[in-house]
Amino acid sequence: MKKIIITGGAGFIGSHVVRRFVKNHPEYHIINLDKLTYAGNLANLKDIENEPNYQFVKGDIVDAAFIQNLFEQEQPYAVIHLAAESHVDRSIVNPLEFVMTNVIGTVNLLNAARHIWKDKYNEHRFYHVSTDEVYGTLGEDGMFTETTAYDPHSPYSASKASSDHFVRAYHDTYGMDVVISNCSNNYGSFHFPEKLIPLAIHNIKQNKAVPVYGKGENIRDWLWVEDHARAIELIFHEAKTGTTYNIGGHNEWKNIDLITLLCSILDRKLGRTEGESAKLITFVTDRAGHDLRYAIDATKLKNELGWTPSVTFEEGLEKTVDWFLQNEEWLNDVTSGNYQQYYQSQYANR
Ligand code: NAD
Ligand code: TYD
Image (cartoon, rainbow, N blue to C red; front, side):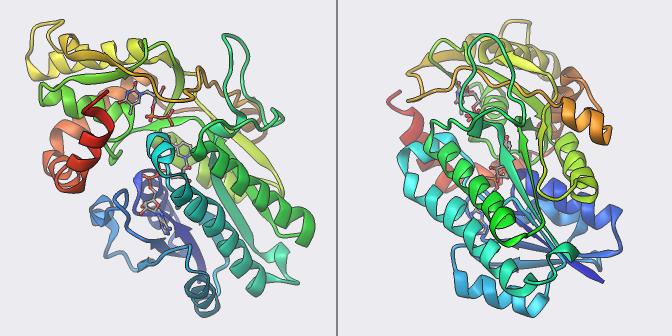
């Protein structure tokens, strides 16, 4: 059976990718390699943990010797690499952590793959899951395409840009079969409540202030996580070697409009009067180096592989809010302990 190592499979997007591969592909044995940082949670995979084609391995991609041993032992057919430090605000506080996991960790995986795959690269595949933030920021017009020049601004996006470059370098230098996808902002179930949408849902639910950075005029292009996972499955199987695809849903929202919509959805679902939750909106000091606008042109993915999003934003957001309301225990678990300290340090004096 072909073994696939999926890194970061206990995180938000990774858990959706692991679930999809385990359920749709009995022909693969899926090894979920994850360090279980604050963002990794095996509760995200409870429904598939006993499947015969699934296995969890706890480990750190920064540990080169561990990674090399694992690859020698398991002889994976392919790698789908999602493990990363993923939150821009945390990268502003501790950039080195992002260099270690996102850059060094990625190079360790590439080296381990190279070590066992050399001379037979055409039988294997290294898929790097990346972000549109590598392209920097847009003004009012235009969209990111696959040929937009890299221009990252945050330590997070700089680390992801660097890892993208290393992945391409292993293709160009050694002939490794690689594919990269750069996706816009995701939302959906199991989203850690440090990111805007789950943080806002959590706070609105608790009648706590909803922090909106600056004037709330920054624009993000939101995609339902299941549609991202479906795109990854498709690209993994169909993309030509060395290809990059942008993934996005043509779904741009100003932060303030998005939060206002979320407030009204929660008013309705929580039986509050219309406008009650919106009173929680609180403008706070802006993020340093805050990118104004992201927007993805996903035409290449649509034309070449036939992918389009399966839900509208309104549908996806409804599903997401319902999931968070129905999974209180998950939300309580991930927001106890260290989360409280994190929240204080980010928001107390803002
Ligand atoms: P996440 O923070 O929810 O999960 C990251 C996972 O990686 C966690 O399970 C964590 O335990 C694991 N991890 C972190 N450091 C590790 C290490 N050193 N060794 C092994 N495992 C480690 O992230 P996410 O939002 O699910 O993002 C997944 C990937 O998708 C990332 O590469 C991110 O850059 C990319 N991406 C995210 C978005 C988004 O909107 N969230 C959009 C585009 C691309
Ligand atoms: P985020 O979810 O952190 O994703 P990213 O920075 O990777 O795009 O933030 C989405 C947008 O929401 C971004 O413009 C920053 C803003 N934001 C807030 O206004 N308040 C918050 O508490 C957070 C976490 C983000």
